[in-house]
Image (cartoon, rainbow, N blue to C red; front, side, top):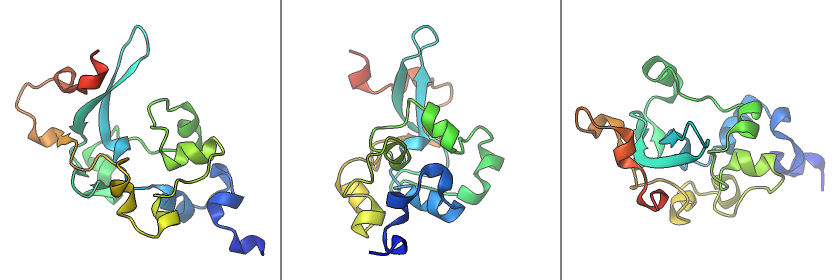
Length: 151
């Protein structure tokens, strides 16, 4: 088999990937767009059931990806360095999996050829989150922590 016949995620590290390859690694799960809270004392990360205002909670895609920083200035742009430091990235995240040498899961669109398998496998946030745009005035994120994290 020629080296060029081997998929890029098998033959390249994250730092070796081109921008289009980097972008293609995103599995469309929407987990990056979930708001989280961090305990200042322990550093524990608590997911909420609230998403960024730009996340389409049905498709799990950003509704304005190209201009997202204009609307959400603190939107995180994942980099190789941030992937290594981001404890909040789920174990299913393609960037994390590649960084850890695990490869892509069967449901990843680059493997399955179908962008719906990420949802079918249950690893996306599809239908699980409420957009921050829909929260009542004065709502606090701590009131939207996932129930499983409270116990």
